[in-house]
Length: 379
Ligand SMILES: *Cc1c(COP(=O)(O)O)cnc(C)c1O
Image (tube, rainbow, N blue to C red; front, side, top):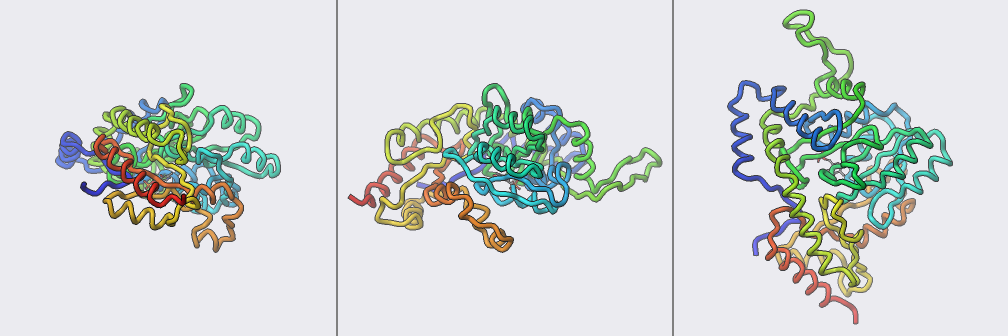
């Protein structure tokens, strides 16, 4: 069996053709394809505006400049990729790590408690972990009661729809961000998208993406002026062409991801291997995480991973809690403040999940997993 990673892109001939064709066009950046990609993405997400940027991290950075001020306190989760809370630090704001619930998402009840105790908290950065959207009713209630800014990190959740609300539609948030890293639902190599319904924020994001420069050609043909400190976070035309081609396939990709999730559930439900939540067709299943009680095994998690690697299967862990990284420890964060996240991290195992994972490969992964598990189970 060829190596099976935990995730990978699905690029087909027509995707490549779209990208190549864009390379022969007059504009390689800041051209029509970017706008078309943004419009299609906004339509797909049922949102007014979409701004394409050079990565999910750039999306988080620009959104944070638009939303936060220096010194702002921001509730967020330690169960994410470091980019989520790094963006809060980029703008001189301060992350506060709130613990998670069983499904791996930030505990919105604990968020409410924190908001009651500290009226100075300005914002909430949540992650739709694994593709499972945040509870939208609770999000709306927090927004109404505490007047906070909300960012949804939807890097895992393109195509998720919960209770009729589309991921990225910003019905109960100010902004959402997406990533087009190769392991995500659609890819542009590197790339990302910001979605919002706010015209003011949208216009600010356009400026920030392009060096803070405005009024191009309005006063004289050569003239544009810089009005704020911006960046070059643009996406190229060939990336946008690739992204658009990929976006057309996202529903098919999601169908395959959900079928794989179902297969995994059929194998694990009713056993000691626990999925994060029951099979849920509203999840976008960016990853499929199971929780394994390694205390019941004669081998460590590391050895378990090594044994799977010997069978050419690349498991992964999403994520090392952010407040456990040396950089964050140095800032004074304590991982003991988020005990559920800690426990989750000890048990979490991400199984291979990507559209081209064939039924034979799925069976191979499950057989290998159960073999390693059963052989090391302490009687
Ligand atoms: C992938 C990811 C990001 C960062 O996206 P990049 O495009 O790699 O910069 C941010 N947040 C989460 C939850 C992610 O999974």
